[in-house]
Length: 310
Length: 249
Image (cartoon, rainbow over all chains, first blue to last red; front, top):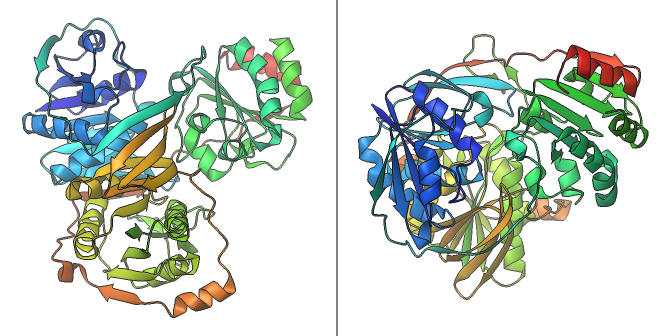
């Protein structure tokens, strides 16, 4: 029994979500191999070989792997699948894009967003925006899985000494091509890996206020910035800041919800945070029902005051 | 060019579901059901492509119980031209739905299938990608902008760090994210018109598809409850709690 983890990386380094996925793979039993497919991804492959618990890294190079196109990535994984009992992806935008394609090509069901490994074929996963937890058993020989990173500790990124094997990649499918990307550069921690998150809702009122009020607090705390769906839909924050059922799932040490009412869909994305603080002037806001510390106040006064007090 | 749009009947997004006391699932008897919100966005996008003259026909499809007819009528009220129900009372998992849809694609020969990225009941986020794999088509998931011209679809996708744009050779699969469009309100005249549109009924066996589940649900339970904490009087009290009680800053 051997598991294959599909690494998420930027060619130079391994993204943190990969580390949580390695932990989930270890819990499935047997050896853990990691696939690093990319362009000029030598450094990422080397970084993967140092992850504790990984016994082998398979490094595949190709221009057509540069942007993680699902067609090429899935074909690559399917070609290697016979050797593996479990194939695991982080439940990120990239993992969710590729994993079902792999499962369908192997004619197996896929198990999404697991939060716990109960046995080699039995897993726990949230359904209905986390309002229920299902324990599910795979009836297929190969288990194709996406891993909710908040459900598993990160494997140590150092201490391992896996061998790195270079493999020839599949050819380009030609079905899709990458035209460009708008990826915001930020000095802040990545939302899904941050220890502290400052998150804003519709009550901020405008894009300008969102940044003007929240950024100084996030700077003081060394926090990532997040947003509710309402704030993203209103254009106050970019789409990749959305926390919730269909956005990012986060579980930081501290989550500060500012001007967020707390719809079910938002709570689904942050209720596993260790400590939740809510600042809202509506005493009846559902967010107070999950907050460890609630402050009923006008955020435009309270947040600058909080920033100054830290 | 035909566009096929699969739609799913799910528990309405405003309903907080209850887990059955025997742990066999969630209680959906007498609960409000609606079209999966992402699928509504998919239908809207297909109808807009028809209004722009890019598409000639929009076909809505649903797989499930007879009541999915209501969801299909809603799709036709938004603007789909006709609908197909693959009727079954069996539990359908994403792989089975993808196989049913593949059989319909083989028959209808659309150039584009637009699906919701995720159903808000099982939260799987699989069917579109699986259908793309079974058809051997290209895919662009989590779309926030779609442009179709000259046998290509240029699709902007919501990804973890921001946005990226792909070019797909048609035929292709697109799955929708929240910001792709804002679905129109369904008007009464359009609801009346939708009643007259064709709704075909087929069975999985007619399509030669085995829908047997591959994943068995052993138990469904309530998540651990998070209890409400305390309200603090002011910012100073909050800072004190965070420093000395929670010790997180």
